[in-house]
Length: 397
Ligand code: AMP
Image 1 (cartoon, rainbow, N blue to C red):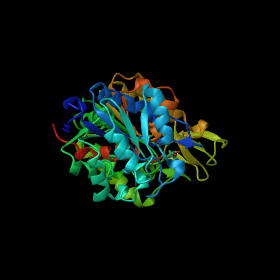
Image 2: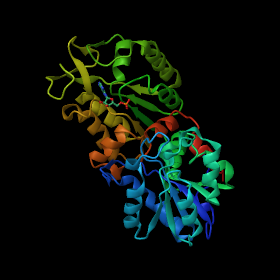
Image 3: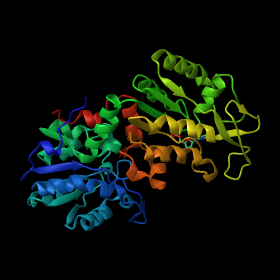
Image 4: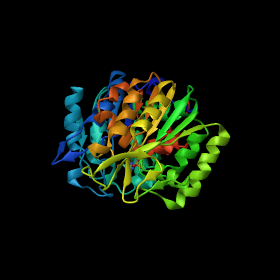
């Protein structure tokens, strides 16, 4: 059980609080095109302001590769955050992040004021977890709060290094929610516990499959990765995606599931195309019966029913990876059906970041899910059962 101190467990009145946020927003010609991450950060910021802290925000944005790049400045974020919060967020425009502007701005702060530092990745040490920059960040604050889950699987100065030089390091509300669901609900689930895995490759999900096989009652495998399983069982998969090197692994997983009493569900039919294109001719065939010049691009209707039925009586469901090439509308049906089934079940529903999170949101089911993770890589590593450096660095309760 991960039991980390959060902003609800400390008193920040009059203290300088450095908050690592995830303000890695898409920008087009200096304009923020999707402000979800800013909106998501507001509850933590508002709570710290209400408690009378002096709030110093920091984040990375894009990949400036260790040097100032004006197009990746956080200046537009300060402007938009000021509007969203209805109070000034003072931007400290130092190319070295912790420079004269930041120091003077922090020095002048009153309780409840907010300052935003420049893009932490303007400093080359940031992604190397260098000591000097970590110390500089720590020198600005009395308390550190990590609310950036997207980088929690990396050890950088602004989420891990800094914690070595401050006494109090806690998590914000966004991090707490990720820990509660991806960490604790997955490790200590209400049963029946069903995991649905999809996406392109078996090879990128091996550790997830292995970790979840020890925990779930039912494991559902769809998407591109299911064809390697189908071929390993002697099926005909035509031109479908397949990792021949992983066939033996697939058979081992099937055996392991049987030994553990885990129900492992694979597609029983597929929507196939005669080309990797939305305009391909389409037919539905039984899995393992795909003609030579055709490829499986989605699960079929019988499989949709099988998978949807499997989550109906579940108490906890975790989903990572699409059921087919959902970017092509003609092959998005399987992914949509799974999203709908999750929206309709009474179970705790946890969506691992990336494509499945995007699919759920685009389809308008976002508010029907218990938790949609904000981190792609970080959520996958959580599901692999790994310790995330950004989580580990926070003080235990
Ligand atoms: P991942 O990043 O591993 O979760 O994979 C996501 C990608 O897998 C998406 O871009 C899907 O288009 C792709 N994908 C899912 N099913 C298939 C399939 N049957 N054939 C080829 N690609 C697929």
